[in-house]
Image 1 (cartoon, helix red, strand yellow):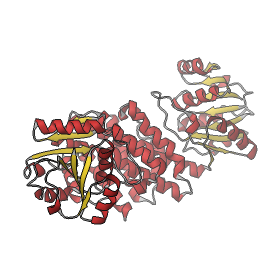
Image 2: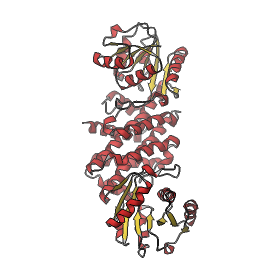
Image 3: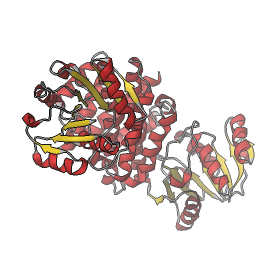
Image 4: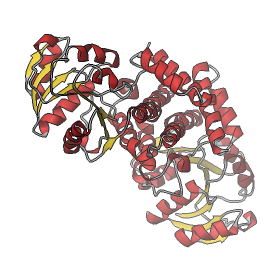
Length: 254
Length: 254
């Protein structure tokens, strides 16, 4: 497929690399910053552009991988294309595009991308949606080349997935950071809790999290809960988080 | 070493199996429930007992792996032993034992144990402490047989580690459970977010969590934050957690 990529952030970069590795052709990469577009075309080929009026009209697929609030503006500039236009957002309705172009869809990879770490698409859930069956087939074929986990989900389910991902990814990562803050204050290295973090995630690969909850809150071990609470007395923010999540663990156990 | 194990819960079970696998001898297993003691001696050998007056006085090591508030009571019954007595608790002072027995120490494995999943001790941080250098050496030798990660930490550091573990393990697992609650309410399977959970943990194996934070809060993406907040309007508990953790992410970024 001839693909035009609109965007040059983490999702755009990882996705473009995965597509090119599977033999797809990147004909153009658009970014508001030509420098960023060039950095990416250096990796994946194609013409770097920073002006939407230069977009090639004869590509098969246009992937809009930009910040949510910039999607509509870009779709506005793609009204004359006949290829399929998709966005990669978890929270944006497909109608933001389908109201403007002939063939629209969504291609949402449910994963956390950082520049710092390569990702392997094989295991990434790809959530697809399209305005009609034919386009859905096109997306399904493309997604199945990249990953073993392709899901057809509607817009509401996609939004729930995105919200669940905040709970399952963004919040846990922040809690790792708070743990590290506590460790550093006491001359302890983050390395010491890495095996615990790994095991905690590994456990739920084959179990449901509800069935493997551990710690003082689930045991209703008030002595330890009180000790921890008072250890955090000089950090009210962490104390508040500790209380909120411990209460929630107790509530769920009931 | 001849070892008497006092306790039959998750930590006791996993630790006993690891010790026996490395050639140590379990001479007795004590549990208040003789049935539990028998279940464990069936796995690791030794005599099952449910009466502390029957404890063998000539073992080299006594491992108290019970609930925190039961440690002191068991140590009371070990006053006549000459071997080293350790507990496995993250939050309990060594003095709870050392005030009662001749040689005392702590042997705290920083890991989450469930009956559901075997663990490999090689990678488990073992935090040791002892009343004197000689006993510390004994513990260090034993711990090094089990794991490549042996740390000498004092009581205060151990308590911080235990608290950090709640943030890095118990709370993230609960957030996985809340994510699953959202998914189930919308006919989505937990399987779909497992790769995301795995990647989130994998990322911090080589990076610090602060440097790989993603999601709407770190981007200060108020549109998405507001959307998510209103999606949770019928679940005030999740809404409160969402707000608390998002605020904390924003605060840390400053």
